[in-house]
Image 1: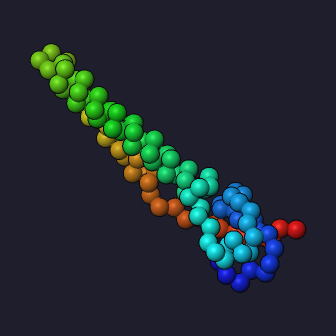
Image 2: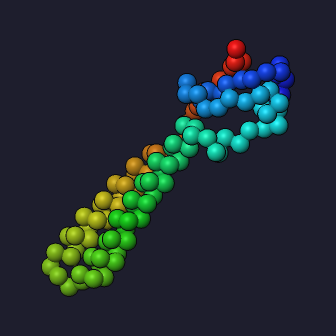
Length: 109
């Protein structure tokens, strides 16, 4: 961000204070990836759901479809785990939807 008067500034995203930086630092560019931004929180939620979905899928595949094949209830258990995997996948896709964010830079006094 160029054109800021010399001094220190605060960056807020969605009303949440993210960092303080000088006009010079803003002009050089600031890597937001190392800050707890709303975008990082969203990405963390997507990652959490990805791990849960993978866990449910591999539980179905390894522990039910492979290890318990031949039992009368295996088909029902496998179907229930498939449904759970699909539910988690839907939540994962909802969580990954792009969101608008409001950024505000304010001069610090």
